[in-house]
Length: 334
Image 1 (cartoon, rainbow, N blue to C red):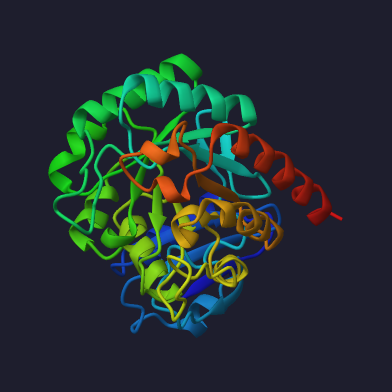
Image 2 (cartoon, one colour):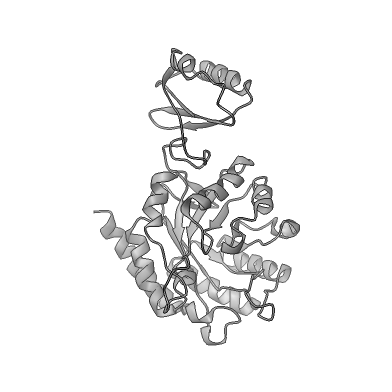
């Protein structure tokens, strides 16, 4: 249920209404926009008298929300959420470029790539320290050492760092990480999601390989309902009948998620496609359909990469892609 207040309601009267609603055992999500304030009622609203609330002098309207997801619902929060990572803004018309290798391999590698992608125009540095791999014999990442190397790259370049967390037990290692990523395989790891709700950091939540948009939003809801409203949604491809590409990049998800939710939506074409030469056209397509940012894999020596070299761009290829993406951004504004 949402309660839309009339313009210019005094804060004291608004707070009195919120206190009364909280007394019914409800959690109240407050969204203050330029023209109106929306109160989102989260919890069991079966005993709430909609007609009584609607009759209050300060209330403009009361509406029932049928969707199971509440906190991330645009009806609860009509204006776009803008998430700040240092000086970088994501969402609300701000476009973010995240780039870096699939996995952190050495100090020379991660620092070199970080400097190259920053020069090309990247805003954040990605790199995997913990790597969930299909085979137990594949490279699993440098773990804690990898996070330390990412922090070294941040010191050298000033780029905030994004890296994936796989387990609640590793949370202490991520204390100085700027954005915590939840990978596709952990999208419905509900214990992890609830714990990340208590972390005062942005969470980049990737869509699962075979998950619906509603399931993605419900996973975001787990994080937000636990107290952390800084969630970035990421479309990274889903499994379909494609036999030549790693996955199918569902770009229709971008405008649909923007319609359903106020959260920023970025796209990872690298994991979706799995072929480096196919990444640029899909990155431009993602930009054209309204994505709030891109996550691109970049490696200084893809042929010898320990993880996903086939989908990684070289630094010079990434620099060319950034120029094309910015051109698409300009055209899209028209």
